[in-house]
Image (spheres, rainbow, N blue to C red):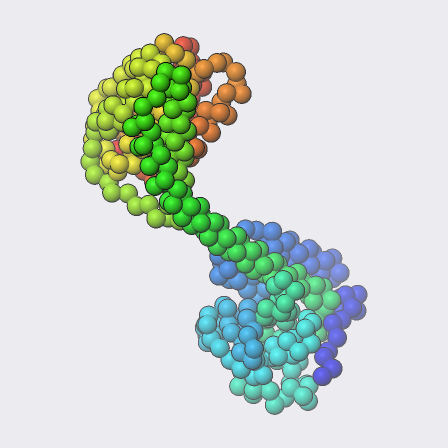
Length: 403
């Protein structure tokens, strides 16, 4: 079929002699601006993107019906549509051969039909017979080099002056933008799926390593050695402890990454949770002769997951004991704020004052601070690092909202 050609912009302008050239240029500039805005805007969903493109396109091209379609085999599937009587809905399926878009599909180019009734080959078309759509402008949508579907606008009004090259370029720009969105969205979904598979694999490996490492650590306690070998035995125990800590961290991170962690919240006092966590570090505190200074003021009950908050405190206390200088003090503070939230602060003196040590602290205990951040996020709280303050050179703070 010989499709009507798009009119040269200069000739198209001359046909509109009742509209000044300045007015036409102003209208074109405004249309370009509107399309530029929607092509550079971020969209949270494909439906949002389609609706805005169709709404703007109907105004820019002066049409009454706008459709974004997907073509699969011989099916024409409506992704979304805007029509005066809402006769078209998302998910509607029609035979491709019964649509004007079959012309775009076969030609794989932008097509503008300003007066369908004047074309002998189109007079008997089912769309024309049933809906009397006289004007039609459509562009193919490509995703990754493959034809996905079409962006098209139509109306029962005849376009007396046809379609200009500018209009062809504008609808091409819109169709290309939709295709790019779909392409990037597909790639994002592939990355997310690959990431999920990787998290599961890491979780499986960590789970399988947990038992043999636990056995090594348990058996090490039963080994009797002489004084010359005691240092090596302690090294084995420490290596097993560090490895187990990392394994549990990986398992927790894998669970969080796949959204499998659900909080079991109940009203509890945070100081009780903190005291229980602290009791597990007596040996570490004694080994470095670290003192604990507690400042607990007006502590209300808050809604928390006891086990998960114990993880938070254990990670932060472990971090502090590991990086504190011997014979220093770790300060633990729990205070109610003016907004009734409860603020926890932990401060300690680092091993040295080198700023480079900050990165080591953040990455300590198998990225345990990442678990802390994730658990606090589930509690609608946020962890932040405290600036150096007098005696204490390292600290972390978070606030738990009141119940």
